[in-house]
Image (cartoon, rainbow, N blue to C red; front, side, top):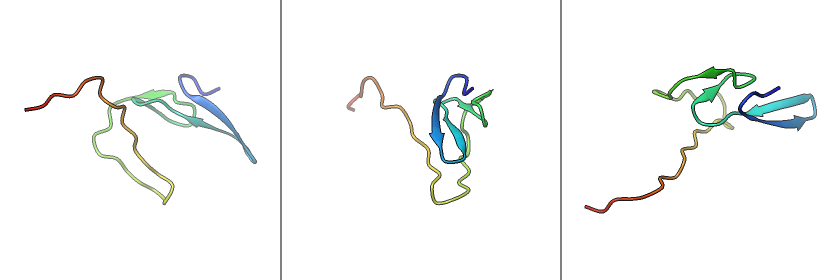
Length: 56
């Protein structure tokens, strides 16, 4: 149901947790995040940790 995402059971059905780069009710859309839009207090953006870091 959730395509590339993880399906989570809720009281009213299910919710999809989409991986970075996908979005939509069923993670059916792809795209980069240019300007996040937060619609409620439970919204967030999570970024993957880098594989390596560089010190200057």
